[in-house]
Image (cartoon, rainbow, N blue to C red; front, top):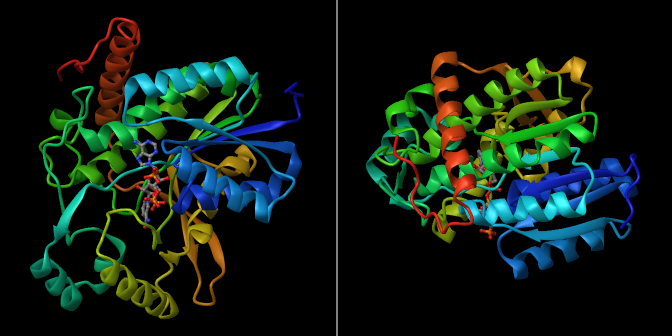
Length: 343
Ligand SMILES: NC(=O)c1ccc[n+]([C@@H]2O[C@H](COP(=O)([O-])OP(=O)(O)OC[C@H]3O[C@@H](n4cnc5c(N)ncnc54)[C@H](OP(=O)(O)O)[C@@H]3O)[C@@H](O)[C@H]2O)c1
């Protein structure tokens, strides 16, 4: 395909379901034929099914599927090489794919929250018991690798292409569950953490801000933002089907009572990601998190909020660690390197 400068290119990781699929819908809705959408997915069958659904809704769409496992360094490096070979520029990189590795529900906490903090119960994953100590094949914290590090590598590898677009945007899907106390720089990969998901989402916020500052310093025509899809009734967390069904109704009830974080649908949840990608830069700040919100009548909108408890020193330390690990993996990528550098 010959690319014209006006042909925009968007990469959406985890595009085949949930918020990622919602991002694809919103992008195609607003950008039409002038967009080439790259669905960066790990499972070809699921990716093709989602592509078909998008083509039914947007028959004009230019959609490409590129396979990648964001939790595997080699896969991300070869994905990035394929993109560099095929495309002259990338306008939007949506770092959206993510996992919440759960092993059950803490009923005691759940019941306690029903009476003490019902909104918190519906907004956060406090009552989810997460797997602790999971390591991937690269020797990294599994949740951190998929939610953060794979995207860090992707961003670093594609910087030249993002810059070529003249206004490249990197959009990190964080979460309202992310908070500073869930992250410990001495356990930056969240391996010992009881909440590796929250730790990884806070890491996304930190990386988005520090990268945004660097891009501004380097004047390389890239900007980086962090967003939250609020609460979307997706498949993340692999909760039992009956819990999902009950939860679904409660989300709508809370939303009707004015809890705007209850976006419920992926389409509503994706509004902040697409906003951060398409709004003029003069109206955005990389120090804010852009939140998807929905009013009681189902209308989605975006709210910006300064990230509470942002600590610059910790953020810079984290990026330093990611950069060292990235360089080490890259250097050894042809040498069958399988172990992550230690802290
Ligand atoms: N749902 C919410 O309420 C909520 C709230 C806050 C933040 N978020 C964030 O929103 C993002 C999307 O989550 P979701 O709710 O839409 O969940 P979802 O429906 O489970 O979607 C997650 C997507 O990520 C993909 N993915 C997971 N691991 C991957 C890997 N190693 N390589 C490539 N793709 C991978 C999944 O692919 P497969 O289909 O192949 O598994 C799927 O397409 C996540 O970053 C999540 O943390 C969600």
